[in-house]
Image 1 (tube, rainbow, N blue to C red):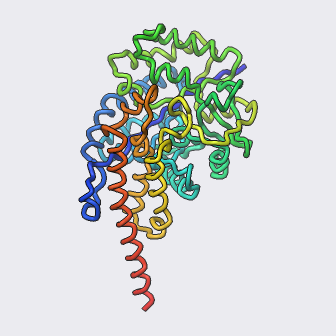
Image 2: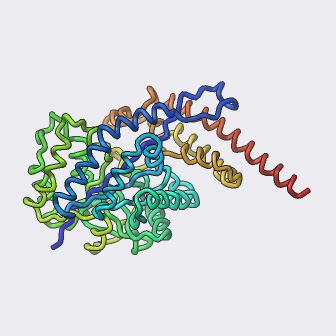
Image 3: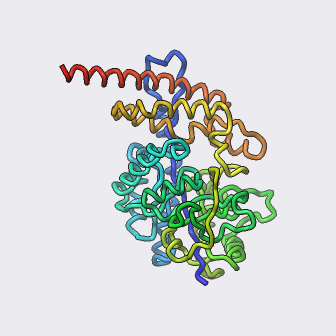
Length: 408
């Protein structure tokens, strides 16, 4: 039986908001903290993107194309690479040229549009595909939604866009007795194949690699390859999906994470029957075993594996719905600057910062949050949104006046 190992990495950097006060509303429409964006992007580039891309290229060349991976690079990340670290874009281009790296489609703004506006969702996917083609010279054939968010309805929408492959979470409450190490199909449109994240094995690298309290520390490539081999003994595919920033940023170089990754392909080749494949290759190699019914959206976040990390409280929902209430007016105005800011304000990160979860997931949320409290994140965002709404209204009035003057 053919057995596949599929590595997928999410690459994303948000457009962070500056401290935007109440008295700025109506007076200053500069929302984004370019200094923070540049500083953080340059730091992550030096710690993660550049060294890891060099390692990936080295592994592809060393194993003569038998090592394969996939990336989903958000549109906002590509924009920041262009502005602040063009050498990172160049390093991704070199990976694309090997033919051993697949680039996936997603929402350009790393947004939650699939949960509320199919029209905006489709528009952002088209914009993202165009950016991938422009920067990396390839057209994506597989899809991953923001934060692996998926439902039957979202999957059907993705299938209507022409995609036959989608990545999502192997959520326990959805799978039940079934396992994530097989390919499934969308419950509405069976042409859409689903690759499910094996969250346990993925999190062994992404979250637990440097946990010295773990009985399995230190995690060596040989030990991990043994786990992979055992996990796929009676199965077909293991999907390891994680943030690319795991390497060098979330797990620092001092943990040995780079050496682990350098040694992993050899351990897999020598100790398992697994073959590295891209998502599209894996979907072409294995047949689906069953439809997967997902009536309510799932994601790869937190214990619940749902959308509560972004839309789990009143603060988040108020901000989310007030933003999308402006969609029709924004789009009818056809003002490029307004549309650009509208999409930047859709980035899932803004809503993540407003999360009020505690206990096991609270530490994770705090790590990624530049605000001291979720309430500060909410107030800052709503101040920005208040000014943005004024701009949208002014743009609409200006357009109406322009039409009237044109008919005279």
